[in-house]
Length: 239
Image 1 (cartoon, helix red, strand yellow):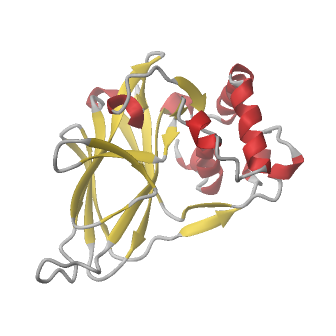
Image 2: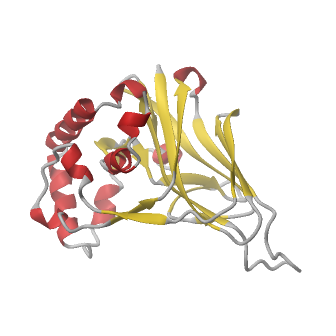
């Protein structure tokens, strides 16, 4: 089975270039060189019309800030094993006498993995509507939070679910071996982060929480993925 792997990063340049290697376990998928800023771009709700998503009126004026660049690969399921791994290698900094105040910085904003056969407008729309019925209470709560973003209970609700096919989290191993799940963090120098893989319903899925918790998680469809499809025209560029 063929899969589509994609990720969006943000990059703050200090000087020189940064090398980023992408692996499935220890198998190299690609090595890219980043030598200029990668920022976010604003996006409105026009993407929802493409997938006929039914939403309350207060969603209409919401603006999203997504990565301005996306890296996308077609890979075979035979290379998918335990994890997708990112290795950052950068020696451009002002490190002197044990102090570092400036360096190139990278943030792993979003990563997704989905079977290529599911990259179809009708299929994705059907999955969204099925998921909305299946997780009705969750969607009602996210609607509530969109209306009132200051609701502190949202994070507690969100962490009881496993997003698919996209995640905004990565896992990093601390010096003492402790595993930490992180989102919206900046990395520089020589750093390795990863996203664990699981197999559910017969397909490989990204799940950052696999190595962090033993609690069972209920899956929900992360419709942020649909924004990327619309913004980067993925349905037409992935043949």
